Amino acid sequence: MTPATRREYGYPAHLEVLRHGVDVWNAWRTKNPSIIPDLSGANLSGANLIEAFLSRADLGGATLSGAFLRRADLGGADLGGVTLSGADLGWARLTGATLIGANLTGAILDTANLGRATLVGRTSPMLAWSMQILRTSTSPAAASTA
Image (cartoon, helix red, strand yellow):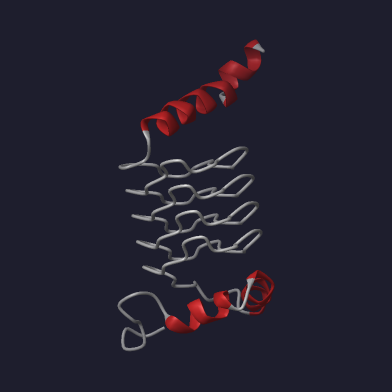
C-alpha cells in the first residue's frame, strides 16, 4: 500500500472485508497472506470476531469495547492504544502482540495466550499482577519445583 492510498483511519477496503463477517475475512486473509491488514482507528465495538484471523494486523487506536474475540488469532498484531474494555479474549492468541497503552479494563482473558506480548501503559494493575504470577508459574525454575 502506498502512502497515497493509506487513509487517516485504516484502509477502508480492509474494514469492508471484515464487515462481511469472519468467514469472508478469514478466506480473504488466506488468499492474501502478504497483506498486513490496516484496521487502525476502526470502531469495532461489540463486533463478533470469534476465531478471526487478525495476526499481524494494525489495529492501533481501534475501539473493540465489548467485542467478541474468543479464539481469535491476534499474534504479532499492533494493538497499541486499543480500547478492549469488556472485550472477550478468552482462548485468543496474542503471542508477540503489542498492547502499549491498550485499555483492557474488564476484558476477559481466560486462557488467552499472551506469550511475548508487550503490555505497557493503561493495562489494569490486576492484569499486570496476573501476568507476573503467570510468568512465575511457567518459568523453568517454577516448573522444576512442581
